[in-house]
Length: 410
Image (cartoon, rainbow, N blue to C red; front, side, top):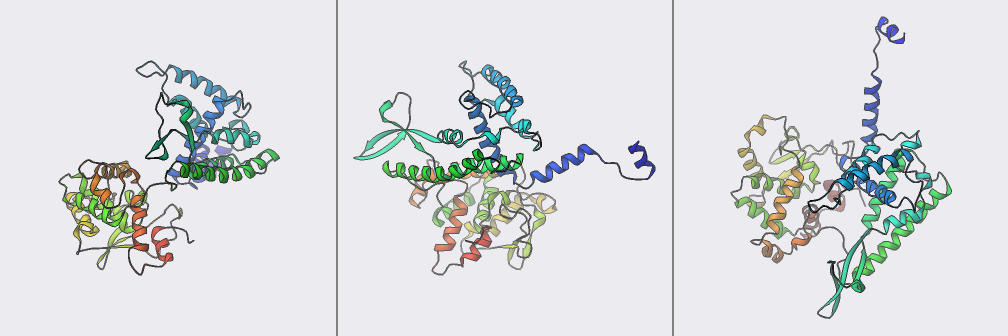
């Protein structure tokens, strides 16, 4: 009757499924895709832990999901390696958990992946205790150190090194997101209030304990990858510039843009040519949304400018851009990305890692202050910021660096 009335009055019929899908899409857009993937990965690990220890920590997985996980676990047992052993990845149980994320209804607790109201600190602490690295104690030149654990090592010399604070922060961030997705308040009851109050203290203690262990065994206390020094960056540019490999033309442009824009690489690989232009003697980039500006408002009035460097052609982004356009003239037609293809992020960094770790070039990078072991995706961005802040006698103010790097002001 209502449908007929709306049609008779010339009204618009609503597609309830389409509206529900659109609402869900908008709500999920509050978190960047790569951040959501990270949250989901840690939540999957937590739920697998709870499933494996369901007798010790009962009633934390809702019955409906528990039944699905038990069926998925049986499928995983039948998913064998060539040696006839169950595969460690457990893809069926992971898929069942990820599928459950898509059906969360805040108003229906039975759809929540975890019964959050019953989650105690001691349960989460057991899970966090698994965040460790198994190593074997040894002595080198009279100094205590550790080596990667190998089967057959003396059990009395095996220790578990705690991971850095960032790992614990990732777990608590993903758990906080699950609370938000399920619309369960962090002070819903005394159990949950104690969970969040105590886990903050636990993280501080774990971080200090990890630092003490690293000091005891002569390990570096800093986390993440090292910044690439300018000399090493210049050397990498030189290798790509002189290379005859066609893939290295795009990789060279990517490298110089990443360095000059201090940008997170996800912006570089998703740049559309429509947002690139010329402004006097500079290449102009109109920056949209970034990790710290998900609505794309902060950079509306000040596009980024990238300048040439004729004194040193191998690090010149304008020359690298010209070479890329000559090789890919269709880009000039517009309506496409500067770097076509999927997974360009990993593609380019696999090229960089291969060069830096190659027998031919490895020592030359070490001589220039870059340990290939600690070279990673953030090394370029870190190196560029370090060079700007300390590579000259009069560096730009910290405010200018934060704006360029899309960081929040300290």
